[in-house]
Length: 617
Image 1: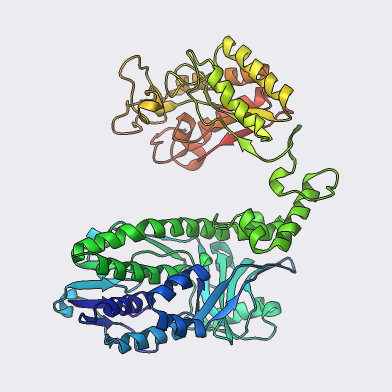
Image 2: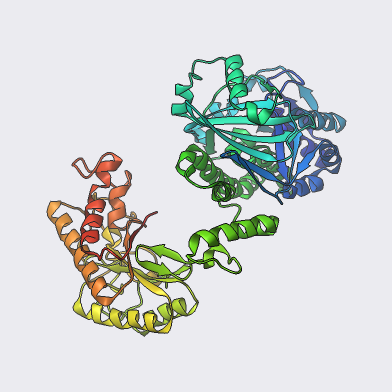
């Protein structure tokens, strides 16, 4: 078999190496547009879990790579002239140049042909091949040529960043936050190679423009950052390597292969640098592709297997990366936090690391967080600081004994006419006996027309009030838990069958007219809703107010409005479901107008001392 690989980055080199090892008779050529020994970038990082997969894939290169590693387990956060350290994060780094040199030598050892300094503009120039592996990066020529098949999408980030180096050996992964007259700048830095550290500087667009960095050349940008971070660098110079200010592009590709062409690494996906997974994902792509080619009988089956294996994994990392990216793009909102909670928020930003993870990695840091949180949460000091979730929480005059919220998770536990039954009481009893500080009902319809299914509970009849008053009183009598009610209107998701018959399936009989922001069915099989007019809005708003008054009469401690899950109020918020051309559609302010009218009307009659919240998705 003849295989051509475009791009001699880690993905292409590793794929070639692993395939050649498994099939020594294959003719494999790797073509790179840049000259040999020329690379842009500084260090790359790997976790211990990633290294285990490298060890299994090719032990010789694993040994050579790990022999060049700088390894650390701490993360330092420089914020408000304090340095907060959290340990237990075992990460290894290596110079990108060293990594490429190791992989190039291994490819040559197994008999792969390497061609450098050759640009490919037309795939016909490659001659014949059985398989083309495109690992030619974000600006992939192959992906562009067959864009109609791969269907790529690129979303630029909102922040500006520049990738620099520092002639300084840091002893931890380091985040630095510094403000000057132009705005806030942040640094993502980590050591590699024994003498140097990666030093990425990031700021928002407004700060970048105010600092004049949009007009600065590479040398001027370097000087600006050198001056700004002088207290942190302590005389160590910053270094550049074709460094320029950029917006990070998140690449997603609908199809990963076409005929006998397959995409790899940054040619098919990117993940924001703040989670340090770009090279890891690229090399794991290579492992998956090589494994698929070995296990499957033909190329088409192998490429299908590769895509099936990797696509979901990459999507999970991309989702985490986008959450992390959004955190740093909106970091200013957290500047009011003290250094310790600021650090905790930063470390858990993407959802990949939790409170429990931090306690396992660094018990001392976990204890420090617990003590700080307990002192802030309690009016009196604890003799022993509990975990944050078990500290009290105050909302207006409501005090929860802990921060655990449980919901029965069903809206269909009723006999008829929206009334709760023994099953609904059993669900709620399970919640409050669990020790949760707050029990939340399922979504309660504010009207007959606002039900999701005929079996949904509601708060629109006097009998509902009396039945729920008994349940609320039971909760208050038997436990210190509080109970909240969630009110909602199904909108275009209404008039459907019981969910035991399937999700969002229209009623066969006994249906009713449904309404929404725009006449768009929820699914292709759904009933088409009627677009709401002003009279409908006034009627719905009245229904919410009536239901809120009933909830107060029943004795609920907290009220929540459902602005989520594609129901009526949510349909106004999204530009995909709100196509109105009046004052209730268009930009975000207009789309929020009706939901906020409902909120304001409910807040006006809901007791001042009781909290109100909104569910949004």
